[in-house]
Structures are given as structure tokens and as C-alpha cells.
View 1 (tube, rainbow over the protein chains, first blue to last red):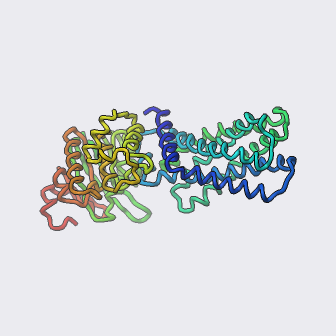
View 2: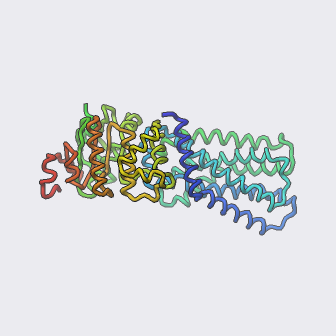
View 3: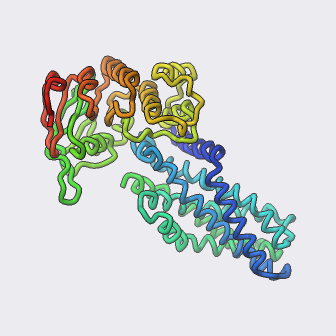
Length: 225
Length: 225
């Protein structure tokens, strides 16, 4: 069985299902929208304060929105015992993980790309000349959250308190992603030179690589036990 | 050589022993019908053979391969039709078939899929989402999937449940064709009359112990357990 073909089939299935139901993306979007509105109306701030607060607010919104999507990721596999079917199929477990990671990453990124302009409007920020850097940080941060989140989503899907357990397990582990993403975003907003915050982006990339590889290897144990 | 062989299989959940020294043998081209009251351990036995659970002790072989040690190869040989339909609600019938077959590295032509759907009597619903299907229609789609996969070993958990009379005839026709082509079938059932039409071996699982019985006794016997 072609390893990449399994990844493609799983991601295709998740994307088609989501395009038709819009269940995950719409709940993620509306949750994040409410967070933006609450924060923008709670604080009256000038542009300088906004530049200081916005990175933290934005990544908190993105991570909590991501948790909503990640929580639903393997839940869909429980309907009609589809998870059991995946376990019985002669396919590499790592490919199942990567297929799910691709769809989770895309769901999160799509919502973030829709929300990012709203952040810019509500917080009155000037970011258009720095967009490529923002997108790079967004991709690196989102990959980190979805790499760990996909693993924990599979781990918690069969337990009763999964809605509580997923954030409890996930949030402490993604602290480095949060710190790196918030610091890098803040530096870009302040107009600092790349050399001053390059190490934060490197932290994100290293985290992504390590946790994707570790999750890939651990996933077989998680799925079969 | 046996297609499917259980050797002194035991399964315990804490202090409750579900299976006690269960041994059986199904040759290629044979259909074995397994009966027993609710909670007798029939589904547990099928889940062990499908590599979803491991026995507490004992072993089993599928086409000469060790079911525990060589489970990745075993998964490529067998297919299970279970209570859960293993279908995704947002995908239509054809997409579900393509996904299930794609995971096994198969890519049947549109014509083959159409023939399979027509044979199980749901050709007119090929582009209907599965969430609109009745349980009987889902079971028929599972038969179509098995027709296209053509496994060497077929495990079926109560194959006649949810099916109407026409559906049961289709199921038995499929089992006959599969065994004629050399496949081994192990099914659990509560429908003695239908099972007797296709089974050449039968057993009753009662309080974890398997008693083999003559197939001729299936319909004639007043009570099996």
C-alpha cells in the first residue's frame, strides 16, 4: 500500500466531508470571531498598545479555535465505527496520523487566514508590507499546534471526559509554540529586523519537526492500544 | 492448509473469562456459522480474529500467518462486515467505496462499482449521502464493498441483521460466490434458517466454550443453547 496514497485518501475524505457539512470550520470561525469582538470592545487602546497586546490575543484565539477543530477530528471516526475500520486496514499507522495532520492543519489555517484580516481591522494595524512574514509565522505556529493536537485528539477520543482532557493535555505541551509565535508576531508588528526574532521562528520550526516525528512514531501505539 | 484457525483462545476482562480454550478450523471455501446467546463472546472472538483485540492466551492463524505476530499481513487478507457500517455520513455510496478500496490500494473502474451496487440493489442510490441510508442499505453497501475487495477470509458479525428478505438472499448469494471462489467465511448469527443455507460447519459458543454441532441440526434442533 502506497504510504502517500493513504495520506491523500484520508485528507481527501476529511476535506470533502467538511466542505459538505461545514461543521468544524463554522464552529471554529464563530468562536474565534466572538473572541476578537470581546477583546476589541473590552480594551480601548491606541495603536502602540494594540501592537503589544494583539499577538497574545491573536494566538490565544487561534489555539482555542484549533482545539475545537482538533476535538472533532477523531470524533468523526467514531461514527459507524470508522476508527475500528482504520485499525483493521492494512495501512501504516503513521500515514493515518499524517493524513489527519494534513486535514487538521488545513482547517486551522483556513480559519486563521479568514480571521487575520479581522484582527487587522479591529485592532487598526498596519501589516500589509509584512504579510509574507506573518504567513510564515502562522504556518509554523499552526503546524506545531496541529502536530501535537492530532496525536492528543486520537489519544482522548475514546475517553468520556475528552472535551476536558484534550486542552488539559495539549496546552502545557504547546507553550513553546505559543511563546515563539507570540514573540515573533510581536516583533514583526514592531517593525524589528528579522535578525532580532529569527530565533523564535527557528524555535517554531524545530518544535514542528521534533513533534511531527515523535507523534508519527508514537501514533501506532496510540491507535493499536 | 486452514484459512482460519483458532488454537485454544482465551480472553478475559479482569476476572470475567469471555472465551475459554476456543479452537476451530475453517478451510478455504468453507462457511462456518457461530451461534450463541447475547454476551456469549461471539463478537469478542471476531474482534480478536480481526486483529482489533489480542487474546489473553492462545493463538490464531490466518492463511498460515500468525494472527498476532504477522498482524499487518493478516489485515491485508481479511475483511470484516460488522454491526458498525464503517461508512462516512457525508460521503455518497460511490465515494465511500472508493475511499475504502483506496486504502487497500485498489482503484476499481466506475463500471465495476456500478455493477456491485446494482447487484446489491442500491444502484439507484449511488450518489446519495450515507447519512440518508437506512441500516439495511448500509449493510448492502458493505456487501458491495466486500464484493469489490474479494478478501480471502471474511468475518461477518450478524450479517442478516437489518436486512429484508431480498437483502438476506443477496447476502447468501454473496457468501456462496465467495466460498466457491475459495474464500473462508466465519459468521456469527442468530438466524439459523438463513445460516443453514450457506454454512458447512457450525458451532455454539456458550459461556465462553465452543461446541461444534452438525449443520443439519441447525434448523431441526428446538433450542441450541
